[in-house]
Length: 438
Image (cartoon, rainbow, N blue to C red):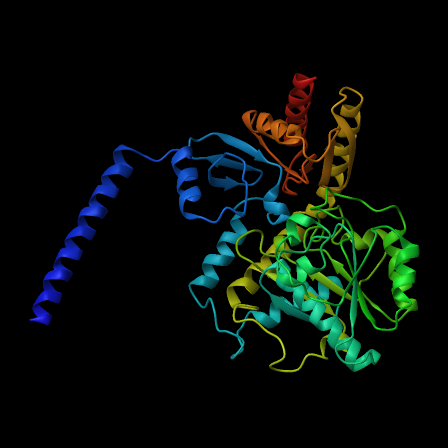
């Protein structure tokens, strides 16, 4: 009897499923979803941990993205610098498809054909002994903290469980518990405690505060963004990074450069630290390391630092997977072959020249700043003002996508593939919008 009831129930469930699928297909053919429909679904079923611009994208190519209505936009955010190579780069598509047909995941329980090649490509390009592949940028940050602590205990001789990591106020390297424990932004840490101990926070660009903090013999590392992106593209004064690095060397402390956003050509150099001739003790890369195809990050260090990790002490199921590694090698090659670093420097200078000229034409702008193709416009309001968001809405209407950060700062970071003519067109649209508000 139970079996018969189960069979009837199953048939009825299958009937309902077929009916639902048929209706869904009919609806999609005759009543296609629009932007409002997609946004409503996200609102109904997704966590409300982001506040996106009201546009629904479905296609991308190079600098451009298209929404569900077919409208084309210039992307001036680049997925927070994850698509330095442009959207859906054909070489990356080919690399992904070719590897996906062979092997996507082996875990680190076994060797695979791609991991060593990717490690060699990164180590050779950036002059390090060893590479540790992870997935997300915040995982790279977490890994660097663990690595620095391990080095402090086993090489520097810091007493167990007493290592300190110095961080700069205004930093942003993710939203894990350790990352928000090092944050000074209330929106990151409020009501998420208790927090991870072991972080010493000092003002950004303050060498006196750094030297004072470094006097503590228990300090393992100083973790720094060469340019603070999420804070509003805060570019330090010339010589700060080099001076900070030299102070770390003086006190036998590791210098960790978080180049997740600033690395891989974004600032007009392979690394932002290279503008001051600095080779970090630990280097963090991510975002554009896959060209936006999947989460790939990496920690690079010397043998002295990296080999403090022993088997079983750190890892990730997906870290160093063959699909990610094949993409990373190709992502680096695209930047090299297409001279995207050089283009970022040239087009960045073009953009900054325009932005500086725009400040003379409008009272809306408090300051412009940037390096390469990582720039920002700070609107002359407080952070609670909606003006920057309203400007971004007007830019969106004109076919140019940007988004504010910290209320009154608008970040400009197009793919590094942008051409002179495309930049000219974007600058014309920016000027049109700003002058229409005056």
